[in-house]
Length: 85
Image (tube, rainbow, N blue to C red; front, side, top):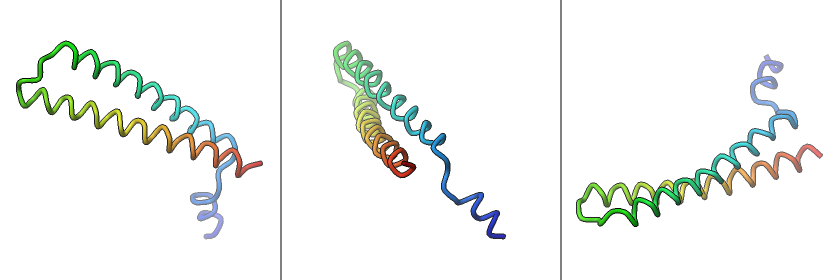
C-alpha cells in the first residue's frame, strides 16, 4: 500500500524540472505575443462598441495571467533545481 502511495505522491527526479523550464519559456513567449496582438488591435480599432471593450479587457487579463504564470514557473523551476542538489 505504501509503495503505491510513494509512487503516486513521492518526489520526482531532476528530469521533471525541465517541464517548469519549458512552461516558463511558453509563458514568456505568451507575454510578448499577447502584448503585440493587444497593441496591434488597440492601435487599429477605435473602441466604440461594448464587444471591443471586452476584447481589450480579455487581452489585458491574459497578459497579467501570463506574467503571473511566468513568475510562478520560474520560482518552481528554481525550487526544483535547488532541492535536488
